[in-house]
Image (cartoon, rainbow, N blue to C red; front, top):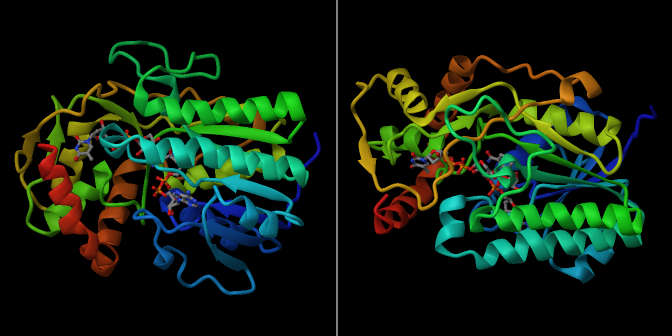
Amino acid sequence: SEIFEPKRIIVTGGAGFIGSNFVHWVVDNQPDVHVVVLDALTYAGNLDNLAGIPEERMTFVHGDICDEALLEEIVPGVDAIVHFAAESHNDNSIADPEPFVRTNVHGTFRLLEAARKHDVRFHHISTDEVYGDLALDDPARFTEETPTAEQPVQLHQASSDMLVRAWFRTYGVRVTISNCSNNYGPRQHIEKFIPRQITNVLTGIRPKLYGDGLNVRDWIHTEDHSSAVWAILTKGRLGETYLIGADGEKNNIDVLHAILEGMGKSADDFDWVKDRPGHDRRYAIDPELRSELGWEPKRTDFAEGLKATIAWYRDNPGWWQGAKEAVEAKYAKQGQ
Ligand code: NAD
Ligand code: TDX
């Protein structure tokens, strides 16, 4: 099948965790591509995430994906929009869902309208959590056929996926969707599980484990997510949904033990805290991407990846220290 070769792409949410890792990946691996980052720099966005990228490779636009007039300025003439911008943290969505509906649903709608008007290829970054959760002993994993979930924390993500499918079917917008499992790696916000615990240890706070610690997440290094998105953007079938995963299932307590061990702490050096309401038990991806697009994850050694991630937070205290107190104060208020 034909290979799509975009030369100028908009990356929304490119100052966030996964988006910035994708921008670095494109700059490092696709020398002919110019990236336009569109990011509102919410609490989760950080311009430092794009430090070191030369001007001739990237243009940064500070703005909101819901801003129709701004999209009219920057979308004409680009070949593709790769859409990472979102409210992404489940604990926040339980506490206050409104920004999630605004950015994830209305923002995706605005981008789809701009892509339709200017005939621009659109790739939508979604998440495995739209498929709800699995029992710990379920032999099945999520596939493209798994029905979408019905919990509030997932509905805004599932809704945006439905919009994308509708804009393909009704208006013929050239779309693809990917639903990836849990990412880890450098530049992840310290509200998330792995960076929260690493920076807890670095600041002398005991790590915090929700519930019984047996919830399972399917971990993938963010670099592998980036290469998978590029494979889908350039070789994926239009209208298709692709699940991205790297066979990385682990329960939270095992991940925490690996962090503690890697940082010279004893295995019981942490606190059990209040569980997340409606806490999804297990996410697990059955990736069909490999055979179809020839994509393979490379960073599948979790111990090595975790070690590198711990080193990154240790070596970059200036990146996270300013946010630490407020993040922990917010969690303390929630009993977490
Ligand atoms: P993040 O919270 O680190 O980054 C989100 C970025 O979007 C930030 O830079 C923020 O400033 C920007 N943004 C938010 N609202 C915006 C708006 N209205 N206009 C413009 N920019 C806006 O998120 P992340 O972890 O990088 O996740 C990105 C996407 O990938 C989300 O949809 C998330 O659900 C999905 N995903 C995440 C994971 C994971 O493990 N983190 C796994 C699979 C899928
Ligand atoms: O302090 C903590 N202690 C703890 O036990 C935190 C922050 C989390 N947890 C648990 C909850 C989850 O079982 O760790 C697991 C991972 O939590 P998060 O990092 O919040 O990720 P998760 O809820 O699994 O959501 C992630 O995957 C789906 C991403 O953050 C989402 O953006 C993505 O859509």
